[in-house]
Length: 159
Ligand code: DQA
Image (cartoon, rainbow, N blue to C red):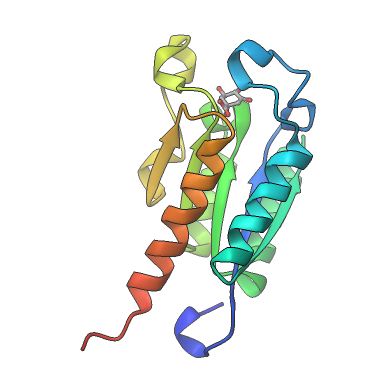
């Protein structure tokens, strides 16, 4: 959707990749104790406070994430994505984001640069607005705020 088209509410999709459905249980020393439901509820609340509709979605399947990115084009103004391990492997997800040309922020709970070297490379980093990594569940909130700020400032009419 084009933000400049109307005065309607902004809409953002938050995409979570594989294994993030297990947050809360999964390696809590690395990923924290917040569940995905808690992270999503907080993101929706932050969205409401900023007058933005936030729609979260999680999938363990690469093709489902690619389909969701394609569908986002007609439904949302921007994407916050934690692609999980697909960050480090998926050219398809990178190409999907590049194809839809939607403003996208990449987020990670853990600081991927402090971890194993295979996590240091992100296929998404070169085609997103920016990346937030290492703030636990708060990374999502920071990513959402940064995306909303970007969407609003890039459509602001200069005075
Ligand atoms: C992650 C980091 C990835 O390396 C890992 O595969 C994940 C989660 C994070 O949020 O810190 O699944 O994206």
